[in-house]
Structures are given as C-alpha cells and as structure tokens.
Image 1 (tube, rainbow, N blue to C red):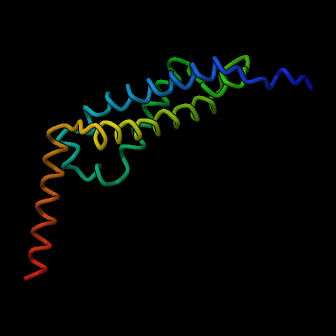
Image 2: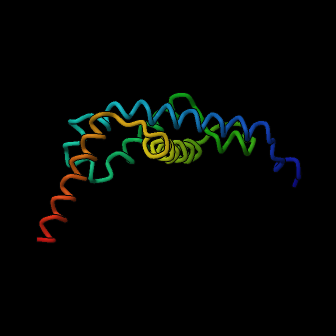
Image 3: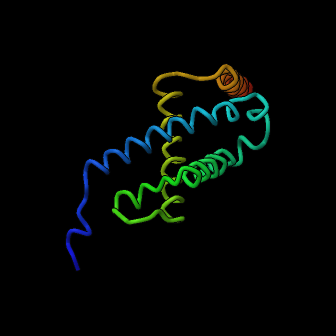
Length: 134
C-alpha cells in the first residue's frame, strides 16, 4: 500500500476547518430568524429538541446542494460521498450550537424575544422561591 495515500495536507485541513466554521456561523445566524421568533419560543417545539434536527437537516441540504464533503476533501478521495456529506453536516450543525453559545452567553448578543423569555423565567423563579419561603 502506498503510504502517500494517507498524507495529511495541512493546508487543505485548515481550509476545510475554516469553511466548516464559516458555514456553522452562517447556519446559526440564518436559523436564528426562526428559532428566536416569538412564535417558535412560545411553542412546544422549543423544548423538544427540534432545533438540533432542523439545523442538521438544513446543514445536510447545504452540503448536498454544494457538494461539500469535508471528510473526502481531507482524506483526498476522488469524489464526495453521502456519508461524508452527513458527517460534515453534523459538524456544521453541532458547530452552530457553539456559535450560539458564543453569541448569547459570552458576547451577550440576544434577540429581544430571547431576553424577554429569560427575564420571565427569572421572575417566575424568584416568585416561586419567595412563595416557598413564606
């Protein structure tokens, strides 16, 4: 077996990582229009893990449409594969969760609907604590 088949091209790996991070941020910002809407936040879908499945489906559609398979690119295969699209989509969708944390928790960027929901939870928690103490 030719050992050059398993050579890691670090320039290509870096390009793929940058592309995945950028797609992850784009996906997160695009889906925030839906996920941060009052309609979605007030629905039961917000509590049942729907966001993750929607993010994965959209990421997979993007990867298939633009034939983006980071796994095949890093492993230097001649063509892309459905499994590679799915793995790449999972990384992109999972990465969007990280960018959500970065924007909301670290940098403090939140929509007004999210801020209002968090404030309402805090008020309800304080009211429950006050009721329990009396």
